[in-house]
Amino acid sequence: MKQKISITIDREILKRIDSVVDNVIIRNRSQAIEHLVNNSLGENRTAVILSGGDEKNMKISENEYRITAGIGKTTVVEKAIKKLRQNNFRNIFIIARSNILTSVFDILKDGSSYGVKIGYVEEKESNGSASSLRLVNGKINTAFLVVFGDIIFDKINIEELWNQHIRQNSIATLMLTTSPMPSKKGIVKMEGIKILRFEQKPKQSDIYIGFSSMFVAEPEILGYRGSSLEYDVFPRLAEKGLLEGHLSSEKEIHIHTKEDINKYC
Image 1 (spheres, rainbow, N blue to C red):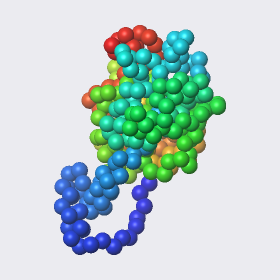
Image 2: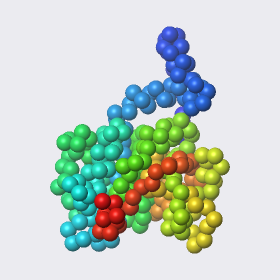
Image 3: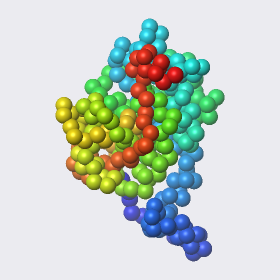
Image 4: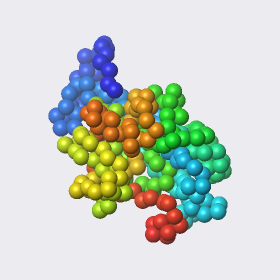
């Protein structure tokens, strides 16, 4: 959440800050300062790759997990890391069970060869995505990106998602796309960018805008109770008016089976 502060600043610098205000995207001095500070800190952005859950359920073959599945000459997790680095995310946490983390470490090591710093967070047990994400509580104190570990998101404009969240006043901003099968996604009822209601995999729905396994959040989200982001945390944030959405023209690709890889390739 945003906090009101008082600062002293040089008059000429203040004029330069005011020149950033365009009354469209950046509407006032506070937003201009926040925009400039975030740009200057952009190289230190943090992301979390969420790959929790039972190891058996995360396998797509005898020797491959969803996150380590081979995609041509690379892997799902390498594509994720490279995309994140291109968007200035240098601090990356990966949450998963022990054997999955070992497989990922065999590929990425400490991340230095990819231009990032990787922190491995072991999940010993979990009741859902929110429980898994809370494992980084205390490790992150600024806005951060969360990406589910079983998606390819090469075409997604992460920068626009990030910038929208930074400009607004919400706990979380979800990446959204249209879906012909809303019963398989978390669907949202919206007014502008504000999400009024979040419902995970409804049996029937006439709404075709859904959550796309990626979001930006404030550290406060880690304090919300509930085992699942989709069933517990997101609905509660929507009720409180603290959940927003960013509609993407491009879609993520889910890698759950070998057939999914063949379709992608």
